Each structure stands twice: as structure tokens, then as C-alpha cells.
Length: 189
Image 1: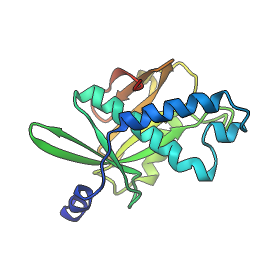
Image 2: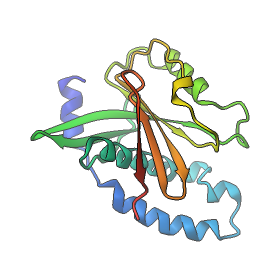
Image 3: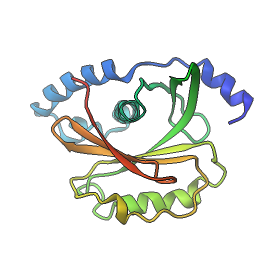
Image 4: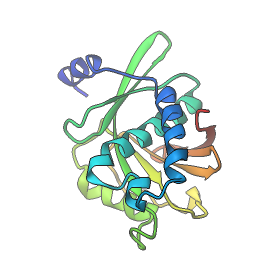
């Protein structure tokens, strides 16, 4: 990323994702027991899209924090071709990376949706995005085998997949552009 991007990233408002997710969990449990329409319970309306994406970004940041051993903060920023910026400190250096969220939607929404299709679509969409990290939320109940994924030539800096494993346990796999490794983490309680 260039100096102008870095200057803009420094000035964003970063937040710890864990408190947000704790508040969301309380709300999610109430909503799950409600008689609200399924599209509202799953945050699948245009008015609720921002909340769904923020939740997904927060979960990804918690997973990355578990992976690298420090807190990863997030700031919403839908500039250019990314949804938010992640920031963390390692070795006394504050780091920033733009993150584009993608989702493998539940099969009741799109029966043909798959991780491989989501990855393959990146090839034509992000042709000049060498500084971009893509995080794909696997929002399906399937047996996920990371070794079955074929990675095409991509012009991005990182590719991660995350999804629920059951209860409050989540998984993060990646970086698929290097040597992908899985990490389990807990949804903040």
C-alpha cells in the first residue's frame, strides 16, 4: 500500500472486536428465540447488511488475534476494494492491512455456493490488489477440507477462510497463498 493509503489508515477509528461480539452474542440469542422473519434473524436485509459484515469482520479479527498472539483491531472503511482495515502491533510496530470480506452463503440461499467458487471468483475481480487480504466466511454446515482447495494465481496478499465449528468454537485457515494452517478460537464470551 502506498503512503497516502497508510496515512488514511492511521487516521481511522480502530476498535477491539471482542466487546462488540459480546454485545452481539447477547442480541443474537434474543433474536434467535424471537418470531422475527428469518431474513432479519440472519441479518440478511439491506438495512442489516452493515451489522452482518461488521460481525464477520470482528470474528475474523478475533481469529487472527488468536493466530498471531496479539489483539487485532478493526476499522470500517469501504474505500477502494476493501471492507475494513485491520491493525495490530508486533515488535513495537503498528501494522495495517486492508481486508475484503467474502462469504460462502448458506445452501438455502445459494445451493451451488462453495469455497472453491468463492476463491475462483477472486481471480477476475482483484487483478490490481496486491496489498489486499481476502477473508472468506464459510457460512455453511459442511465438512471443510482445506487440502481439497485449489488456489489459482491471485494478485492479493493473503487468503483466509473462517467459519464456525460448533457452539462458540470457530476455525481460521490460511494463509492459502503460503502454507495454510488451521487455528481454533473461541467466540468472545
